[in-house]
Image (cartoon, rainbow, N blue to C red):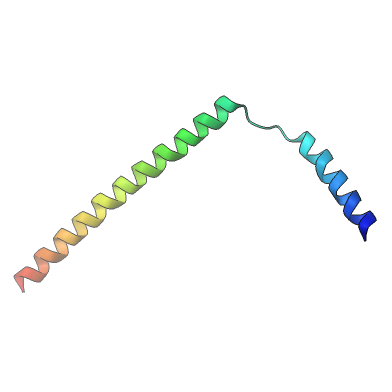
Length: 63
């Protein structure tokens, strides 16, 4: 059992050495992109929700 765990950990470390990790600049750019897209989607959803709420309130007030 211990031997299998040791083998697994050694192989995992070897595989992690093969990974092409992004640079700090790439990571920063991707992070800013995700934040920007998230803000844009949340603003769009806020506007859509406001529009539907206003429309629904208008329909209710007419009745």
